[in-house]
Image (cartoon, rainbow over all chains, first blue to last red; front, side):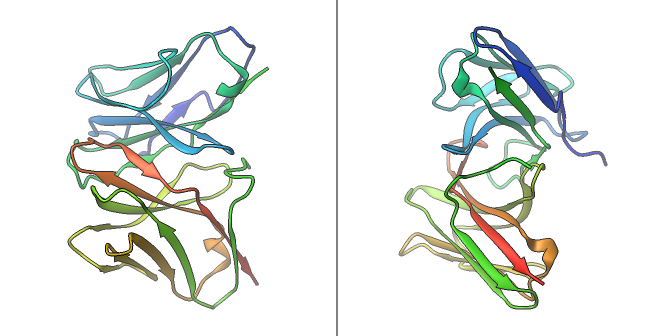
Length: 114
Length: 113
């Protein structure tokens, strides 16, 4: 079974631009979560989607948004990019939203904001 | 590969020795704990998990110990191999928080041949 895939893998943007990142979960998985990883802050939860609905949101500004499609694929968008948004953005999927569900991560999209 | 922490604590072990990676957590409401391994250029990879009603769980060459009294989690890797070199993260999940994981800062494991 194919793992979680994320596109693009690398991205360079300039301040003020917006960016859209895509995540395809493992086939059959319905929950998708997004995380930001930086050297300074480590791994931080952005949001989670299940059945096209945002179920949880981390402590990030409204410039960070996301959505999930009926096929469980998810996208996240960052508007008005700032230098501090440079990070590795990771997507994780799990079968359901059960408490003990294992989450499987994709390879991430590395975003560099200049 | 990417840097996952400028000041990550580092554990250096000899190939074949056992490794112990520790993690402290602070949320008493956390009910589920997971260890992930992240190699350079890759996303975190699930290693093993443990529920709060357990104090020990074993996998293949790995054991996780949970001490809820002192809010401490450890990952033991037996007969450490060069392929175990990576950054290891503990993560916790709180009940009623959906799939939101809270990650620790990570420990870099370096295995000397």
